[in-house]
Image (cartoon, rainbow, N blue to C red; front, side):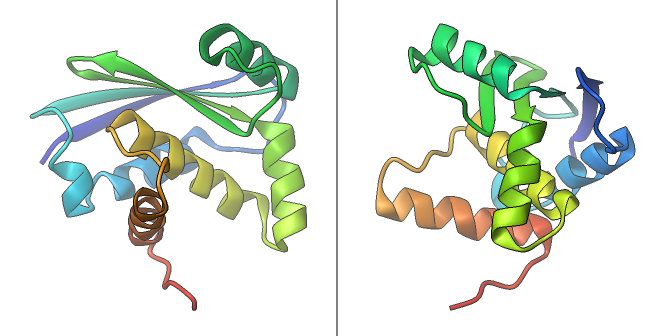
Length: 145
């Protein structure tokens, strides 16, 4: 089983413990489909929790899209699987809109970003369905509907 090392940087004040972030990604790494795509022995993921403005700038610079977003993933190589940047204001807004707590929203975005790092996307309805299936598995949630 691959050991996941998670580096957490909080670029703004957010009541998030690095241990929570590490726990979410470690649970996700145990899903068989996810584990199969991880490098053997060791994997490193960097997570940055930051502002909407920084996500907008990263999105503009690296994706050519001039708008804010909730999560961005940047693939790495070898043991460094990649980097995940998450907008804390988006976490708060989406949690409120979805009627759930901030930790649940953050966990969903972490897994979403992690799946992107490992090659999943949501470009087609079938790919989107698979990403959600894996997200629910990683978070230990039952699918509704």
